Amino acid sequence: MFQNPWFETVAEAQRRAKRRLPHMVYGALVAGSERGRTVGDNCKAFGDLGFAPRVAGHRAQRDLSTSVMGVETSMPVVISPTGVQAVHPDGEVAVARAAANRGVIMGLSSFASKPVEEVAEANPNVFFQMYWSGDRDAMVQRMDRARRAGASGWIVKPFDSVKLVNAINRVAA
Image (cartoon, rainbow, N blue to C red; front, side, top):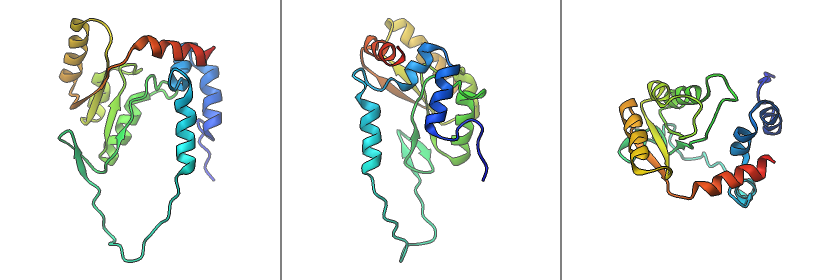
């Protein structure tokens, strides 16, 4: 069986990321919510899911395509924006290419390790994530840059970024 030298398991990926990434970057990746509950809640939710395949009587061809905020996608999936995907040399560009290959939308974090221009070139269906931070002019500049690069939608995060920094510091300590 083929073993990916980067990600044999999620635990191994986390171990390597902690060893190789800067303290703040690793902390941002594993922070969850400020109280640290999000990661545990998500793991529990996935553990509660059960799949019961029902194939009898179904058509061989299915069309899952839809649109999200007017952008066509091959299935109702948007790849969640995840900051600093530098655990791979191509980072967000590799994820954008994979998403484009499957016809799905990619959410690009404001904390990306690659410029929005490179990511949008790899996948024209990019939704740029905006944190409500800085003054109005700084936010407009970031939005204009993403728009010029080809971002086709926005994911707005209207929360206190100080809480994010607190969560990062708590987890990365």
